[in-house]
Image (cartoon, rainbow, N blue to C red; front, side, top):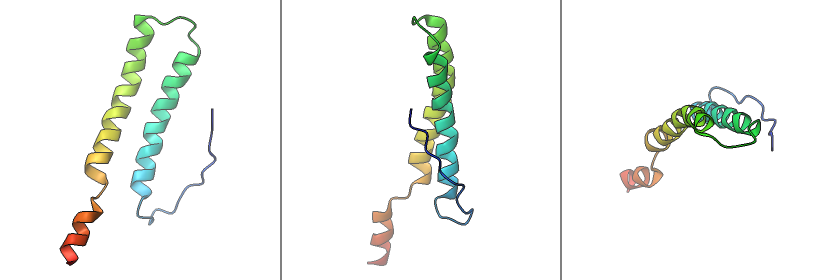
Length: 80
């Protein structure tokens, strides 16, 4: 597993809130990995627990992509 040691960025950084959201999502994914790493055999109980962990992460990621990432090509059109 690749654990990046990334320092806390400055709160004025343009991507600060997105950075925080991505770390929250990553923590949920890491929790899912930790859950299944201790399981030898797949079963419906573990699958359900994994879904409970990953579905909120997926929803957060989808929301971040749809709502927080600007389409910069639209900004360029505004200046033309």
